[in-house]
Image 1: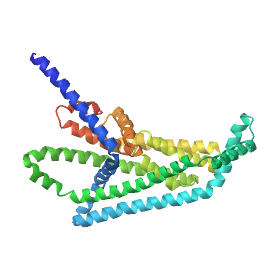
Image 2 (image 1 turned 30 degrees about the horizontal axis):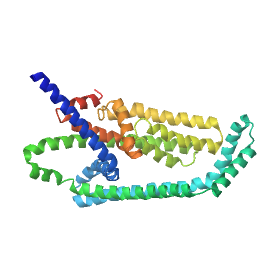
Image 3 (image 1 turned 45 degrees about the horizontal axis):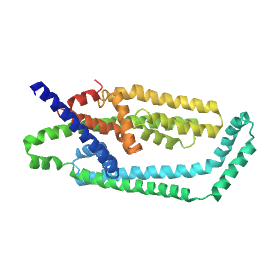
Image 4 (image 1 turned 135 degrees about the vertical axis):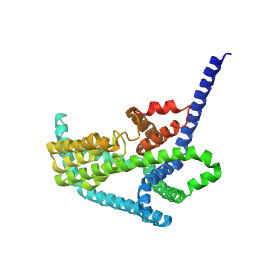
Length: 351
């Protein structure tokens, strides 16, 4: 076997080993999602909270008190969001009879074209509910149990996120010192350089993305408030959160306020106007303001962003979609540090 054949054989072995390694990690991440999802969110918060921690450090506030202040801020924001959600849910329940009337009005237009009266449709709806009540409700019990389990799983994940975040923040300043003791200064240098690049890239992305999302959410809430649409503040918060999901988040965020506008005013024209205005805000901020602020951003190809959205969404659902861009950027930076995987990082970039 000559030298050329040996090199080709070695390349095949490297590709096969890398494929096995990636498959192995995908199985681990998907199987142990109950650990990796809160851990990933904790790391995301760690990067985001690094900004206020560094700001407070300028005032020579001790590390412990800085962490306490930042954690208190996070808990306060969570409490306000939960309060906002509970208030709006109660208000929605109060408005539900009015929305139901509007629903039957719109349904009447469609039913008329099918030669079905509204009264007949209501009778069929009532008969369906009656049959549903008399049917075996075991599947319903299973569904309720799943919803309850999901709710408690959410609370459990929230507790894990807070615990991970507190411990990661407490280890933040001593990690470099312990790495040097463990690996030595010569070996620690490349590791610290890679970690610093990931920190800078993800932190910059989160800071600018948070600012852009806050601007978008504020404009949406203000627009809906001026238009008199119900739950304007909640739709603004929803827009802020969903704006972190690339490509589809902003589109999904426009649907609920447009639907509420239609049921509230009973005017398709008004709903279309609101849809146009919300789309204009999303496109104006997303296509004009955001590129100017972000610049090259994380230097990820749009196709890679889309594929990462699909992959992490398949892995971890909505949570994976929220985390897709920072996680993919961190993987790209890590791939750049290894000579064998550097071509993959080049393919992932937008340059």
